[in-house]
Length: 100
Figure (spheres, rainbow, N blue to C red):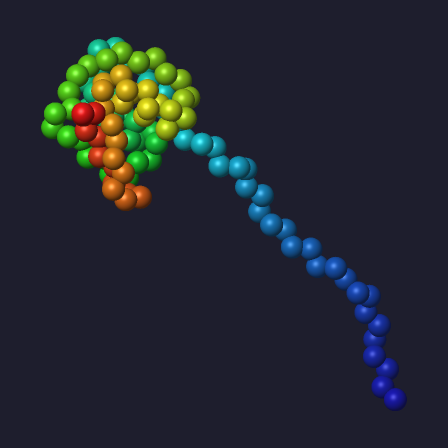
């Protein structure tokens, strides 16, 4: 007969990294009489929009004091203010053009 050493059953615990829920991207704008193209460029960076094409007819200046507004709402506010609309062609390309 063979004698086997006795081993206590052990439970292996797997630590899973805990991630905080992703915080939605927001826009903060504090601009006075700023060109629409500069505003859109700032929003593109803040909202991690990969490619933003702006129609040559998009022009104008405005004043915005926005703090931590969700990206979708901020784009809606800015586009409505300038009489613009956005068209999404793919997950990586959005165009901004006048609303007709």
